[in-house]
Amino acid sequence: MGLDFDPTVGQTPLDEDEKAGLLITTITTRGELDEFEQLGVEQAVAWTMATRPSTERILTEEFVLELHRRMFQDLWRWAGQYRTTNKNIGVDTTKVRIEVRKLLDDSRYWIEHRVFGEDEICVRLSHRMVSIHPFANGNGRHSRLLADTLLTSGFGNTRFSWGSLNLAAPGAARAAYIGALHEADQNNYRPLLEFARS
Image (tube, rainbow, N blue to C red):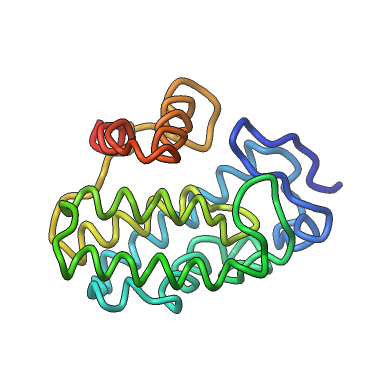
């Protein structure tokens, strides 16, 4: 049986080639997929806490790819690889690498010149990364973990709570998160900052 489900509001649909990259072929529902993905996320969180990468390391393309790979390597054959198809969100595939590099350069500039506070730098990093949508799947979780890693390992602060709920599942928390992302699209970061610390 193949993977057959409709994406939740705000989730990017996978094309058939991407679905074919599923390594655990017994998964058939969104709920099962979410459970396995959450296990991978927890393993990646443990890895970031054990390695405590420096700010310089976090803000590299290699780390961005490695983090995604560690989150989803047990589930997706294409984990840690930029997407090769255009989606209903994100930049064109030909611009993914360029936009990720620009974001990382901007983040280093924000830190060096103290353009924003540490929380806002991390929220802006997460928002821009999810807007670029560099991967076929897992962009929201990846962008939030990237922000949390910069916040904890880079700045020595406490991680964000991100509403203290599972944002992959439909519900009020996901709706609030998506709404805050839309506000950030309009350069209003206050709702996303408040949500990250709620």
